[in-house]
Structures are given as C-alpha cells and as structure tokens.
Image (cartoon, helix red, strand yellow):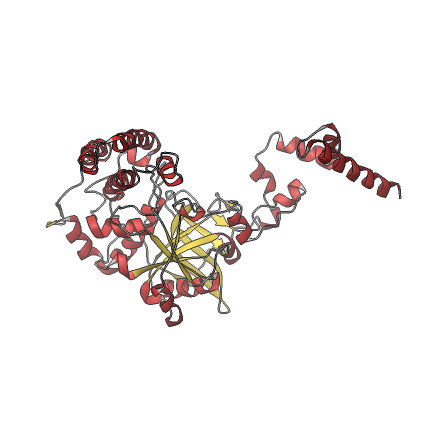
Length: 449
C-alpha cells in the first residue's frame, strides 16, 4: 500500500510540473526523473565498466562468441578484394565489382579490377554539372525555397547508388585499374570534397546573378572547365584510348568487350522499405549522377520476394549490388552481422522495441553501405546466412568479406540490384507502373558510402 501511495504521489508531482511549466524540466519534475537511477550495486558495476571500456565491448554477447560457420551451399565465382580506403565510394566499388565478377567469368581472368578512379572522375564532373544546371533551372525561385536550399546543402558528394554506376559506365565506358590507378586524393576524398562544395556554392551564386539564361549557360561551361582542371590535378586526366594486352581500346569499346550488357536496361533495383506500400515503383527526384541520366528508380517488395531473386542469381553465378545498414550489430573482427552479437538491452536495462518500419520512419536505420552479394547458405530449402564481398581491404572482416545471418538480412538489408531476367513473371508487370515520385529530401535519397 505504501508503494502504491508513493507512486500516486510521484505521478501527481509530475502532473503538477507539467501544468506549471508546460513541458520544461522544473525542480518537481527533476525529482521524479531522478527516481530512474537507484545507484544499486549493479548500476555501480555498469557505471564503472562504462567509465573505462567501449560500449560495444561491454555489450558483446558471450553466448554468441563462437565464429559462425563459413561454409556456403551456393557461391559466385569471384577473385580478389578491393579497398575504397578513406573514401565514400562503396557504391562505385560495388558496382564495378559486380561487373568484374562477370568479366572474370566471361574471360577467365584472375585478380582483375576496373579503375575506380576513371569512373569517379566523371562521376564528380557529372555531379558538378547536375548541381549547376539545377541551380540554373531554379534561379527564379527564392534562395530559401526548399528545393534551392536542398541543392545548396547537397552540391556534390562521393556517395551514390547503382543507377549512377549504370549511367556512368554506359556513357563513359571503363578502363583497367592499371590504366588509371588510384591517387592519394581518390583514397581520401573528404578534403577535396570540401573544396569542391565551397567552389560550387560560390558558382551557384554567380549563376543566380547572371543577367539571362544564355549568360548562365555560358558561365556554367566556364565553371565546369575549372572543375575539370581540379579533377585532373586530383585523379589524372582520363584516357580517351589506351593499350591493354597488345590491343588499343576506347573505354567504351573496352566495356563492350569485357561485359557488353546494357546496365541501364538489364538491371532492376529492388527495395525493402516496409514504411511504404509494397508492389509500387518509386522514383526520387535529383537522385541521379548525371543531369541527363536517370533518377534512382526502385520496386518496393517484401523481403521474401527479394530473397527469391537473390538466390536465383547466386545459383546462376551472378553477383549483385547490395546495400544495408552495415554498422548495426557488426562484429568487425569476425566479419559477422548477427542480431545476437551484442546485448545492449541487458547492459543498459532498457528495451529496444522498434521494428524495421519504425526505425526507418524515425531515421534510426537506413542504407549506409553498398557491397557485393556473392553467397547464400541454404538448409532445408531456406536461407540461413549470406555473404557479401566488401571493399574495406583483405584484412577487414572474414577475408575481406562480411557474413550475415538471415535474421539480420531481414532487419537491415535495404537495396538489391538484380538482372532483369531474374524478375518472376508475376512481378514483371509492376515495372511498367507510373512511378511515384518522391522529393529529393526523402530519407531514402541517401546514397551508399
């Protein structure tokens, strides 16, 4: 009875505090809040530990300490691990790794790589043009208009999606890694990105002040020439043609010989976003790399339908572009993503109850990193785990790869790009829908880094 009276009294104190200050924390409310910490011996032990040890280390689930089984029933033929180093180019490494796997199979190559720097050079040039032309298109709007404000907040980045890979490769082709190798700036993009953002914002003001549309277009070309020079200083000038294994190629000819398929048509992006209606096609404005390219377009599907296509592709020796919320429950030493890796609830004495839909709606989770899906382990007709080829170097994770449980896949996988041939007949018709266009500031705009 005494406990009940105390609880009622605390509730009345809290209600009185709310009535007095309409939401601020006053002394009466603070008394109520302080009851949340009782300073028990268990609390003292956790506090002492948190004072000296990283949260992830303390939250490691000892009952799940054993290394996961690394055998897979089905695996794509790949060779070698790439390393994006200190750059946000995972989308580009992943896209080119998908093409690399196809080229290795087609031409029986060893540890072959396409040049990431070559494609990234044109990515940055095209993104600069996309931004500058968008500024011209919106020059009659006030500078605090939401669209203009968004453009000025996001002039350029080194993140992206598979749509960017497709558009860039089909327009500019590819070259071998040794023809245009990585530079220091390519491997550590943040400082140059900061300078480019400042320059482009400065250019935007000049374009908005131009006397006429033709004047703005002429000025844009001059601005892009300046950007081109900076990119050449940073990455080297991309070749118009080159020699490889005794033969002369243009980058477009090299792509046709090495791969040859139409990336803009032959691949479909799938999404698992339970916060939006399934079996609908979505498009995000300005989510593209080229002004004259394609906005990111995806079909939103239940996770089990996506798994069907992923399994079919792996069984047919086809790697896929895959993106997820990589940092959630990742054990970097083992290279394993497993919901049982860490037990934050027991450590902190709270319950984390949000499901995938709620995490998306509250910005608690979203796609943060792209990798190449290359393996699945099927037991009794169902997938139990998956493996992706990462781009963090050979020493990261499990031999450069990451392994995820099927339960983790359900909760934190977002995007998968599959060849159109693996889309079942009952889903093919949805690709002909008029897409629902989402604004550039939609949470799903974020490209992988």
